[in-house]
Length: 71
Image 1 (tube, rainbow, N blue to C red):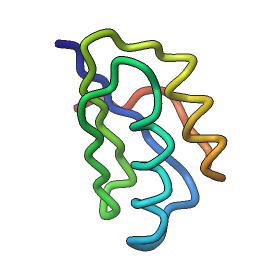
Image 2 (cartoon, one colour; image 1 turned 180 degrees about the horizontal axis):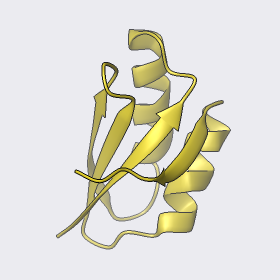
Image 3 (spheres, helix red, strand yellow; image 1 turned 90 degrees about the horizontal axis):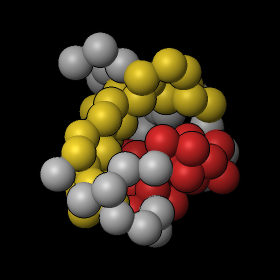
Image 4 (cartoon, one colour; image 1 turned 180 degrees about the vertical axis):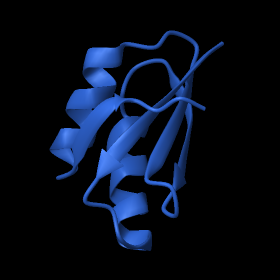
């Protein structure tokens, strides 16, 4: 099981969290998505983690993604 956290820009509400969760959950291998609005961190759990696909899903949801968050 792989886990990676991302700092996401532009999130401000539960709708933002739901949009990101929906898009990232569609990435093959992703098993769980945890969005922390207070810290702007999205943590992704996956059987196999494709960093490029996760980043693309966050952008597709309408948000920016910085370097992985250090958690």
